[in-house]
Image (cartoon, rainbow over all chains, first blue to last red):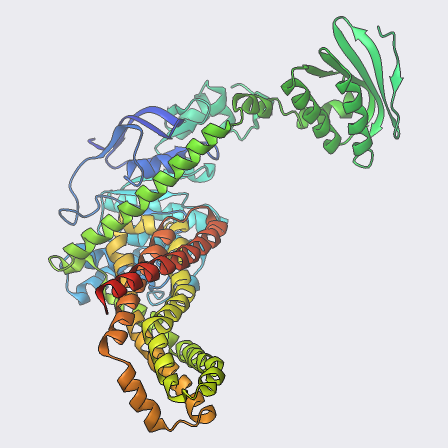
Length: 247
Length: 382
């Protein structure tokens, strides 16, 4: 498989402060990868650096491959933690926005595509609702529909199941698996929801604040059962730091 | 063990200076300490520690009960004592007391505090200067981005979100009409009322038209409208963009390949630039009507004499300078409100802080713009 994202010796920080040092990894086409770690270790920050919302202190993050909607269009889709839908627009308008901006589709076609995207995330019937009129889980699904509007080859999801009830969280996991299996969308998730991780991820990288970098990279089930690193062992087995438990 | 023995008992606990243990001053603490006894406990310990001229060892093996607050006080004393060069060691905790001490152990926090000495005055001045320079750079950068977007708009109209322009014009202009009419009418009325007595005493009743007409068109109309728009639309824009920023909507726009300047800023600034002069002209008119009513009711002017005098007193430039002022006000309100909104950080509290900053900055700049432009108008003789 070819690499879709290449992170090369990327150091993240501000001023004199360094959060992560010389990160080096690739994200392969077609995989579902999770960036995980404890609260405040820099998971979302790393994602923001990969998608170019922040500039690293040194090193690079390169998104390889074609832009699906042509020159200038974003080569990826992003769903933010809150969904980040535009409050003054209906769900249909939210999803239509990137299509209007980056394609020459006629208005009727834009609407048809946007409706199809919303149907994909089971939001048909809610096209004319404002974000304030739907639940948190629906906002996240609508955020995915908007991120998928231009059919990017790679999708970044920031804490997709945070704050959701168990059923909505499971439905969201199913949706991510479906998008990956049916459309071949490479997916990068930031999360620390272990149930989600074991269910959907084939690979995870674990960040650690103290180590200022990646302390584990591999299949989450393998890491849970066989990692010899006590930090990884504690994380996957939900053990508090005070136990000092080793595998 | 100790030779001298001091006791400070202020409750069901004892704090004793037990002499020397090796080269350390030993202090023994015993009994029970809960939050009610904590102030006395703290005073007694501080007294005992302050008298020490060398390392201190606090033996708490005699404590049978200690609550979390008192444990925190113990650790706080250790931190302060160590900071003034008298190392303090706490030992001997047993049972529940040991558990509480472990729970509240702030060794890590101490290590961080030790590593971060407070900045000197020069360093603080330097930090503030750098922050100010960073702020100026940010504002210049923002103005540059807006200028580039405006210059690019005729060549690539699709970079601007024209669809929202009408909605913003309605919000800034049409929705503000009732308050604009009311305020400017009252200003004209009050201004005329205040000067009516003086004018009447000199028999200069008819000059009320000059006074109201010139002050409304040249300054009061534009400035009052700008203040009203700053409080109403400026604060609204800043809070709206600030909320979008903290809820990651601005980031979402960027990831969709949309430029927040063209999509959010230009329509708002344009709406202000188009609507503030319109509101100003309306304010001029309504304010003059307010003044005219006073002239007719209190100074025995006829509507015809008031209007005749008004047309003699005012020329096109009087209205024109007011419109020029209002154009500058519109640009300033739009740019500052948008810049502060997009610079917002720190959640809901940040939105409030940056919105307040936006309004204060706008009002400050309105005064600057007024001073500069009125001086220029005088210099140019208009």
